[in-house]
Image 1 (cartoon, rainbow, N blue to C red):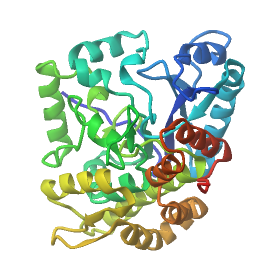
Image 2 (image 1 turned 30 degrees about the horizontal axis):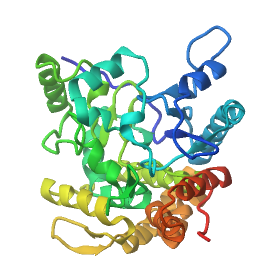
Image 3 (image 1 turned 30 degrees about the vertical axis):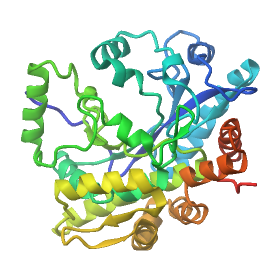
Image 4 (image 1 turned 180 degrees about the horizontal axis):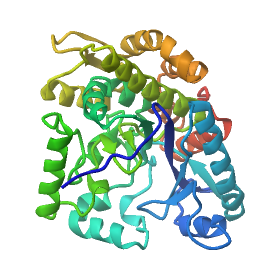
Length: 382
């Protein structure tokens, strides 16, 4: 089989932001996504181009267009979120984002009435029903199909940087899991989810893999490959799906800018004939676990030599290294937001601070997340 890779201008960017719909009074999840989607639908019917349905009826996804810069993408997302809020406020529903809802129970959530989702739940059963999680996806355009998998392999070396910065799911079903990102480990339980196979290094090998998955009935189309980092042939992009949901625009812009800059950086290295960073699968798996467990306090493996460093030090240095690329892409200010994430300790840390200040009442954590969403930036606790 042949998988066509659509034309996409180099280093264009698109962002997808999954938002939870929470009750203004109780902080619990509300199953009103279809009401919101119906209200914002175009006059002729169909789905709003920047507001989409998701697996669960407590969720809507706001998406940007194909943008030349991260600030442009953030303007798109801000407009989409404002449109959702026009509807949700009348329902006494707030918008919130984190990797998980602090106390929502997965068994109480309703699945969107769509054959694709019904098939997923029927096949995956208990694990599929557990998917009460929220994430951020960043697409970056790549002008040549031949660059896609080499850049994917190089970007995996920076997996812990991205996950640690975004880790925001310490609570699950009202309990502190001890992890900064419980979502990362939950999501990999689905078939074809998790780290991509690094043994797939050429487009021919990717086509072979997809052919095998289709032949054996594991997937019905390419989108059912749910890797944390995957090619998106229909858009001509590399899709970064590593990150937990982010509670505010500043942090979202920072992670999107870091992703865009890394892809462009590796693309320039290919153009210059320079070797890209590569890491063994066992180091990649360990880094994923460390960043999920410890978040901004993770000590990560940097390279094939096994050198290690605190992730905050590695990320701060990376931002400085990428400064020239950020200037060229028009995202210098957005990328600088990484330093603010480091300064606040990250989303998981702030949630735990709020929980500690309000013992036994995780509604306060939801209220803080809602406040951060409205403010567009991380807020100090207390």
